Structures are given as structure tokens and as C-alpha cells.
Length: 367
Image (cartoon, rainbow, N blue to C red):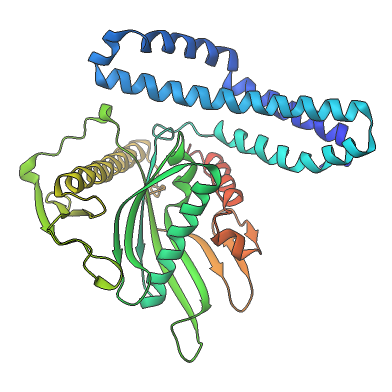
């Protein structure tokens, strides 16, 4: 990084120009204009699938153009401050540059997301692994980490199902992150996350290693045509429960769906009615089946190409180690990135890991 603010600013302007060379903002504005014209046509809404594609693309274009415009405005403000050569303004500019660099690098990551489903919302399922109560507590900590990450960015989340453990934490949880490119951004989180700490549940204060699995899939779009015949589904209804098994609903409104051909099981109990829970469960099941189809297609392509490396994002390999004892360190298994501030990471400050994962996947030819 340059020591002089003026030089740093030139580097950032050049980086932003290279990003725009990929995103092509003039073409984006032209496309947005065409889509806005389409959206104003009442006949569009007679075709719900096309209307959905148009509105989703409009939202993505507006968000990207808004970020570009905001970054240009900040570059201009800092440039003006430097030109004035005022000591106070120069100090302020120097303090703003690291944040501006981080935001520009964050947008640069967006240019690396070009996978088929990268633009989709992300459906995340967390399951506690080996480690008993500690593992259940660890699964809850991971869920909070992702929810705090989304909150930091202003992304909407919606919890579909939470299965609470008896003593503490959760057995599993399923939730969605709703923002353009959520799936592409979070796909690298798929896999096993390992925690090492002094167990708060052990009266002898022994060190405990716990595991949790994170499953990340793209949310199904109406255009995906994931057909699920009724005779391939077993539906079970039961009473919703809260932490520690406490009943939170006096009616059998929770829904469990079992897809008989694949054995995939999904549940939803966070909505008030059985109908709503079934609709949400079907949405989750469709996403799981879409991911199975994607993996099968990828495996077939690998077979046709003679590839021996058929392990993709869907494999349950280790993603990250979170060590809280005897030292403090979070280390990514694939990129090697290390962060010593474990508290900040567990509070949702995971952008550095996410961006490193995206760059690593791109370097591997995965996206």
C-alpha cells in the first residue's frame, strides 16, 4: 500500500476502472432502461416467470450501479480534499482510504462471481456434529455468526426451521440470506467448521473439540422447474417445540417432508400454520434437489472430461478452524488466511475469509 494518500488514491481509481471494464456500467444502464420499459408493460405480469427474471435482474443492476456511483463520489471527495492540501483534510482523507480500499476490493469480488447460480439467495443449513452439547452450542454460535454478518451488511435473513438441543444450542437450523449474489458469496462456507476451546459445559474445564456442518445451496427459482411428484413425498406433522423441547405451539403445525427417492428430509416449524410450514419446507426441499441435480451434472461433466477430481463445493471437507484455547486463532483450511481476533470473527466479521475463499475458488477454476 502506498504511503502517500495521492498515490493510494490513484491506485484505487485504477482498480475501480478495472472493475468497470468487467462490469461495463454503460451497458448495465442501457440494459436497466430496457428492463424498466418491460416492467412498465402490464402484459409482462401475465408471465410470472419472465416478470420474476426481469425484476430480479433490475434489482441486481440497480444495486451494482449504486455501488459504483457511491465509490466514484467518495474518490472525488477524497481527491478534492487532497488538492486543497489542508492538513486536517489530508489527515481525514488518509483515515478514509483503508475503508474505501476495502469497499472497492469487496466490489472486485463481485466480478469474480460468474457461476450459474451465483446471483441467487443462499439457503444455509447448519447441523451440529460430534461433540455433544458443545457441538450443539457451536452450531448455535455459527448461526449467530452468519446472522451478524448479514446484519452488518443490511441483508435480510429468514429462519425456516430450528431444532433445539436439550441442554444448550441447536441440533440444526435452516435459514435463507436474501441479497443478490448471496449464494456465490457464501458458497465457500459449505463444509465442516471445527471449534477448539475450554468447554463451558465441563466441570473439569477440559479442552473440547467440536464440529458443525454448514450446507449452502442456491434458493430455487420458479424458472428451475424442479418437479416433485406428490407420491414421492412423505409428509409428517407434529407439534412445534422451543429450546429444551418446550412446546411453543398447541397444534400440530410443524411439517417434516421426506423425499422418498433420495431420502432427503427437511423440516419447518417457524411459521404459524401447517400450510405455511409445508410451503416453506417444499421451498427447502426443492433447493436441496436442485443442488443434487447440479452435483450430478458436475460429476457427469467430470467423467466425460476424464477428471479425477470430482470434489466440489458440495463435499464435506474442512472449511475453517476456530481455536479459542490455548491460543486465539481462526484459520481457513483452503486459503491459509489467519485472523487472531476470534471475537470479531464470531461476531460476524468474516468478509476477509469470504473474499479469500471466492478468490481461491476462482483460482481453482470453480467459478
